[in-house]
Image (cartoon, rainbow, N blue to C red; front, side):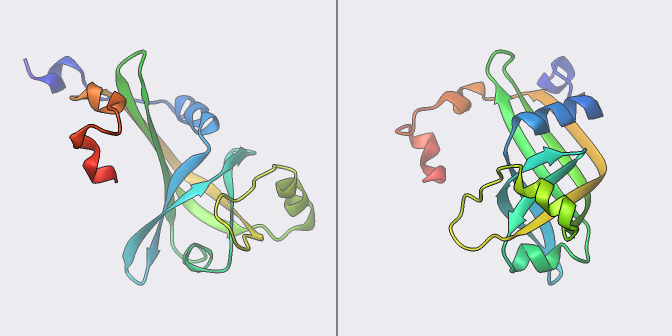
Length: 154
């Protein structure tokens, strides 16, 4: 019996996906830039069934105005020995409405990166999917930084 047959990929329900999104604050934001994908780490908060994050005027700001985008988060649950991944696909829009911007200001969404990040973007989802699976090498999630297998991360 193969590992895949023993531990199939579990599809997460939308509610499970949103619960994981609510417990996580950093994701990988994917956009199309000049006909190729780009991925940026962003910190975010959930508000009214959508994802809000801050940005300056730059690649994320301009790329999100015309093309669909995605946000991916992932993690590992040591108690179950399973990893998980959630992907939100949709479109972003600049928050311009005065009341909506005031509400976004109240989210305490401080940017991690220095510099001006005065624009709020809202990712309105069109689809949310997730999966959970047993990892083939669960020990790698608990590997000390001095282990040679982690050299690729330095």
